[in-house]
Amino acid sequence: MVCVNRLVALMWGQAVWLLIVAAIAMGFGQGTIDIAVNDYAAKRFSSGLMSILHGMYGVGVTLSSFVMALSLVFPMGWRLGVLSVIVLQVVIMAVVMSSRQAFRGSDTAVTDDEMTTVKLAGSDWLLPGFYFVYGVELVIGKYVSSFAVDHWQYSATTATNVATLFWAGLMVGRFLTGVTTRWQSNRRLILTHIILTAIATGMMFLPVEALLPFAGFGLGLGLSAIYPLMMMVPYARYNDQKAKRVVSWNLAFCQAGMVVLPLVTGWTYQAVGAMSLPIIILILVGAMLGLGSVILRQN
Image 1 (cartoon, helix red, strand yellow):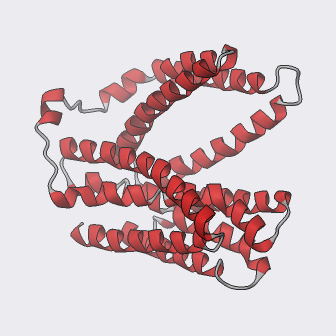
Image 2 (image 1 turned 135 degrees about the vertical axis):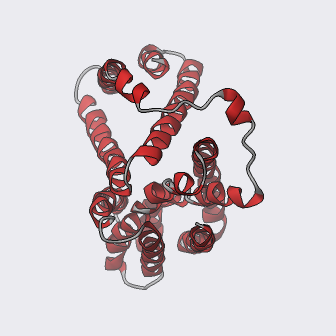
């Protein structure tokens, strides 16, 4: 409900400060939903279903961009796009409210007292640290089109297509992972996908302009399985109380990484040049491989 109220403020607000407040409030609301959904799915879903769940996120990103682009054709402009999202949010809220008894019946509540007694050891912070580094996903999404223009002199349209291929690879890869988890272990899939991401990053160093779209899709395909499958680790390793706390920190660190890493990348990109991007991506992917190997070995 909070998200719907803030969307209304965003749609009708005329002052810049109101738009900023609405955006921040939506971030709080979305963060709460993100933690609740990931915790519920990690505890009760199979790895395949978890991957498909996150694949649907890619569908939502694609459709929302289409809805906003289509709304710009009409007199209301972007406000019509926000209104469409409000209607969709109300429908989702109605479905959730009507089925809340089923969710409540299958859930074992963790009290505040139990949560406050949960202590995380030093090694427990490796997984949230891994998710901080996973902010590389947004680094690629934000800067790969700039790299295409600045390094390879792609047109703006073609460069945008490279970024679209990255997000498409992320979506397609998660749906494929939903199938492959039937035959492969989570550990093997995670490490294989990190290595695939490193290979795709290596393609960005090659002096072949035509390889960049394939590298973009490969980066998305490589990263696709990592987020949902690593989210399964807490409930495979800890009791419910501790797993819930770790999942919360995973998402908090991931969002922090998506704020900090693009900023650092932007400063470096401006100071050093376009070729700093594949170097930064390779460093972050290397950190993911190291952290992932340690975490999965402990598991």
